[in-house]
View (tube, rainbow, N blue to C red):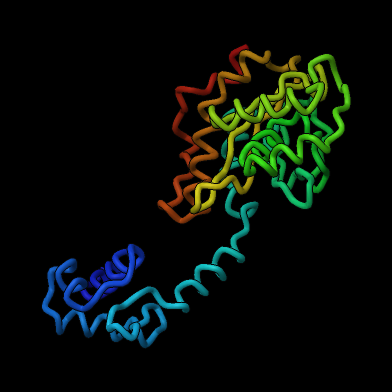
Length: 267
């Protein structure tokens, strides 16, 4: 990166801390005032900074408009898909991606298991919100008042003896999920199906989606599925970094074995 561009970009996080005058900008950049003024004028011309009446500079409206536009155009499914495929290739089980929209948790992507026993979940279909791992992750991140309101208006179907029985139990589980940063569904929707999931976060740290790995217990036991949790969490963290733009994409190399993942063929 050229020195001029580097210096200009360095001004933006400085002004994010609050308005600053020319001398403060020059001092922080370690340059002469004339150099700092030239950079500020260029940024001002493009709407990235704004000069106030007190001669201090702050971030400009154009910068916020670009950030908003970029956020609106982010497609978490498109960003996440290659990571979900990689996760599926490593573990062999069904991988889901879900979001919370209009008071429902919906699957927006799915990568099928390599095994003949398949799940009946479908993209666009709502999940069993009181038991699904992805639903717990998405609802656990809601503000407390909203989380409580959602929990209290939900019905609690007894899908299996392990289903969440009521709002109090659901809120308690959501608190645990919020604290630990992962979730499970161990036979809560279907007795024969287990699931582990992790949250995908945006640049503000809020949960924007959740991914999970699911498998029937005729393929792997609940304990064997839980052993995949480190891989699921790393995948979610990689998607979060790619989605928020906080680091270069780092889709794992499929040719490099992952020590945390048991070989599904070794059974």
